[in-house]
Length: 401
Image (cartoon, rainbow, N blue to C red):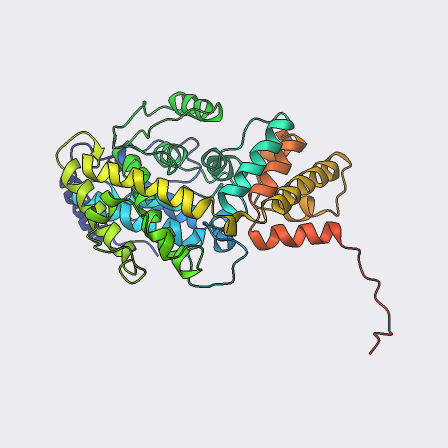
């Protein structure tokens, strides 16, 4: 059914009115850049960046967020954060900041929802192991932000806008930035230059103010949440909280380093840091923390790194997981070179109808092995490993007692 012309006209005027309320540094819907434009745009019904968010949510890669590790893997607890929740939190935080600053919320949402699609099974530890193997096989290092672009742009050919792909590529929650200013030009050449820079181990800042907001929102989203999850699964205890940075205690209004006082740490982090960014970024050309908040965020990240991410209770299975990554990569690469059509990489990836034929025709075996493994959920990763390792049982009529 078509929208009646009079309703369509009123909707168009309403959209124009909303755009007039945006900040001068906001990305306008009319400024979008798309590579192919295979499908006609309907900017009044679905503005281009809103359409991008829909395309990301309906991608196969997004569906696999549901069983991707955020921080804590091999832990049976349904109350901790998984990757699918993390990206929603980043979107919510980013849109809250963007709304206050008069930015394009659709662009923030799409960028946030797609930014971690390239993450491997077992989170950053899996990324570390896949990086080692990829370098040995001559396909460059592994970077999950580059991989996110690869999934959405090359493998599934979602035909996203340049602005969304740039924001996904240039997010970097592991670094600390006090302030961010947009970088680069709205051209595909500029985008490719950034991509190559990041592949070489460098960094690049987003093209848009909205991308800068997502980069900050990424850090804000996991600081308190990871600490709350660590307390939930008892990876850390009150002895660890006793050395929580004093400047963080002061900023977030925590008077004593006890478990009860940290029960609302995530709420306090979100409230303080969101307000801080809004206050320090309003009517400026940058997205910034105050000096005090910036130093606290930096100290908070260091605390989490030492007490949580490198905690022996969390990483005690690292050698087993490293072995699993290497074994799977070698077997998948061999299956590809031997053209073993009944193997999982063919059945569940290469021959899948959602995988681009251009990609399968041009990617080498090590590249396909990288992409197949990077796209796995934790559960599927373990299933494929067991399928390769364990002997297949012979079925018979006699089943024993």
